[in-house]
Image (cartoon, rainbow, N blue to C red; front, side):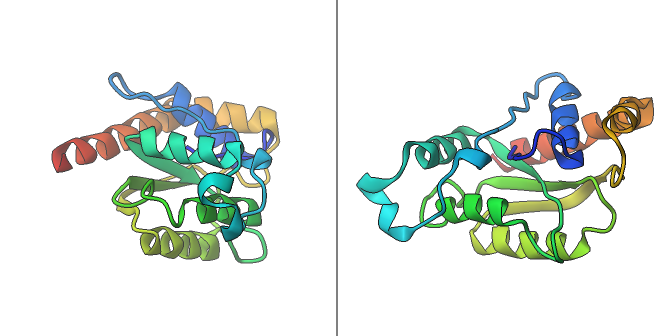
Length: 171
């Protein structure tokens, strides 16, 4: 999973997914987005910064990728787009199963843009099951309470399980 802000609804959702992973599934949170330099094709190859190599390795080593993304000005935030740009010319994304989860019912433009970007990069975007837990505008204590609700914990476990089962059937 990819995440940037420590105090955000999307980060909280990702952390909750990691905490509520079903048996046999491990969810690891990638926390290096804020350390990535701005993508520049001149910095690829032997010039690739260590932070970018760590991202590429994390995505390459993962069985799949789960992304939760806010929407800024009807688009994908620059930090996430920068992260994906570091993967464009690598094999890390090609055929990698990916799923989007959402903390806001209003992020429709970012969802569509992110899905298009990831499909273009050759991620195998899983769209059969969607997880949306509305957290927009909630303060951290409210977010924690919502994410701890039994129905939401069950929804997180079931979504990750269905995604993992789908991946296992494909291999």
